[in-house]
Image (cartoon, rainbow, N blue to C red):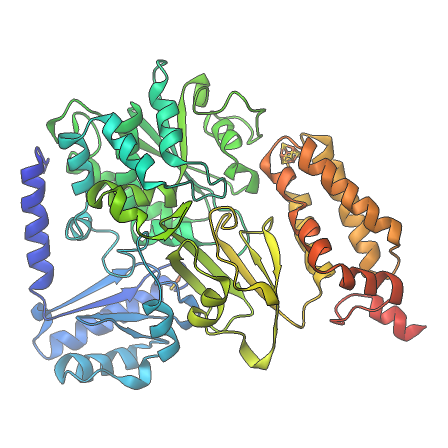
Length: 546
Ligand code: SF4
Ligand code: FES
């Protein structure tokens, strides 16, 4: 059925809201990358069968849903009304949930986890607003969350310029790590008089341990699509490419379904909502390469070439895909757009701090009690994320340092946790917590090795410089480093920062630089005393052997 006007869409939205609220209970089973499809299916079938046994199947909705972000506690079932998150579910436990919670109205405390409840309650979920609360494979569920109303508002009540002004006023910046002002980027593309123009949504998410974009696509694919269509309208593009790394199979499947559904309702394709605006999306996937996250490398890849970064300027906004003006946005950035259009820039800007507005989804991993997805307003202190939400450090260990913003992010010592995470620090959204058993030199060596492997090899400072940095770090971990090596390390880092072509090479030295600033003592212990304080490096063996 094709939706022809905003009124028709509103009717559909009301109908879907009524349908969902007609259920006495709604049971959502997390069906995401962490859970084996057979396990999810088993839980869904058990719940359905238990409800059928007692003839209340029509009163209770049983539905799959996206990742709640507490993957370590899966399989998970969430029950509404209320917000009961049952962890470590089995078919047997699911049956009990039906008999106790659904029939007798007595939530089962023993299957709830207070830490998980707090973990979720203390967050501000704007981007992940619908994740865990709807079936991502049903566009009708998205309608029930006011889905596509922002698009309808933009098309019927706003000019493309007004859309751009609203985004500019919201002060939204790119969520991929670049932190470039989104409205400004849109304006540059919109100002170009060269056609056709393109929109690219980037879901290449290459940082180890970071999975927030995957969870978003698996849990709320339509939010990304709606953001893309609005972006196309604002900048004057009729074609979008949604790039997803090929190992994100479930995300790909759900995005494919979502695109087809949006087409069926006339929300993609010719003359959307009977306006003059047409837009369609092509889903593209490619073998995962870290470098494909870099926007010019991604453009090369979509053009069918090798994913190699290009020299900038010209920037993609003026000369991107096939030399045409191209807007490249990360999927999290795009998922913010419908909210800003619907609720207004002023509403959005109430979240965050001066200069860093809105929220950011972080992947909190490492030595923390509850690892998972954490969405908080920008400006939230690291301490609050790790201790108030993540529950602190397990097994009585002490926090030693935290890496914020992905593998090329700053490494922050444990005594500086009152630092608010702003747009400069957020990077790609990784927060990795390390306790006192880890060696700083060893970790930095691991990170440099990661970049060494991911470097595309195009420019010498990156290709050769990273190998030299790695060799020095390796020497230090073996007790063969010298003070001269430290000087050389600093020099090499400066060269990479200045001379590399793309962000990978330019940002790879950041962990080295920040640890030399905060943890120089630990490097010196390795070099001067031949001691690895954490006992991780091969150096300790040689000390004992001596
Ligand atoms: S900095 Fe590294 S990854 Fe970037 S273009 Fe140069 S060699 Fe390739
Ligand atoms: S809860 Fe399963 S992937 Fe996160």
